[in-house]
Image 1: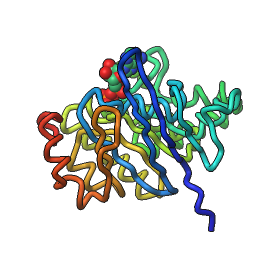
Image 2: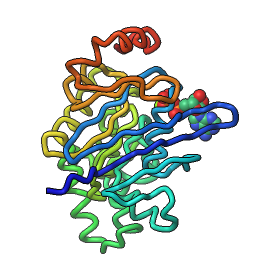
Image 3: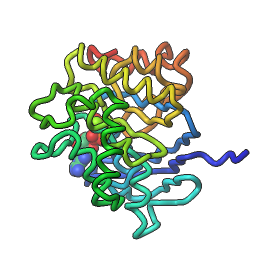
Length: 245
Ligand code: ADP
Ligand code: MG
């Protein structure tokens, strides 16, 4: 059996001016693993996800997708990016498009599917997240939880190999957080490989195969959910994470 990780991040560095946001971050993800990143605001968690899927160019370091290095690969970046579904805190849906049109857009424009197949695929993905009955609603007509589920459907439509979630429930009221977490749990149970940034410690400990604690641009500790939440480092950091933990 191949032991090549789906994703490998090696010595990733990123600075903005004098601010070193990522200081040589390394980790790897194998198929089906759920890696959860926690840590105070401003420690580089979003930057890390953005460097992984190349929305942001790292200053140095490497990202390997199925063993292929992608930071220095030049023009194939769109093909790589399609394999990583990204879900943002604020949904990033197009307000002028209905739910189903948000989901099918990349299928039409990027995958060049015909209209009928794209619509079928988009409806299938909306069903997966329990949003088929809202297919013709515009984002403004959806609750935050529903909008986030549509954005998950949009990411899934590209058949990604790994899903990246950047605080997917942070913008949501407690009861709406739950429906998004449920969708994520279902995905996880189906074997989807996930990298998640979250402040929701209960969710993190029940969802993760491994938790990473980030502080000032570095992974300061990582381990199974049975260990990290009680580690001295984590308990110290928790004070800076506010009421979330
Ligand atoms: P986190 O997601 O852990 O809260 P971020 O990765 O968003 O942290 O940000 C880490 C640091 O990098 C913050 O100090 C932030 O202000 C800074 N930063 C992020 N993106 C940019 C940017 N495009 N330009 C300048 N500074 C940035
Ligand atoms: Mg962030």
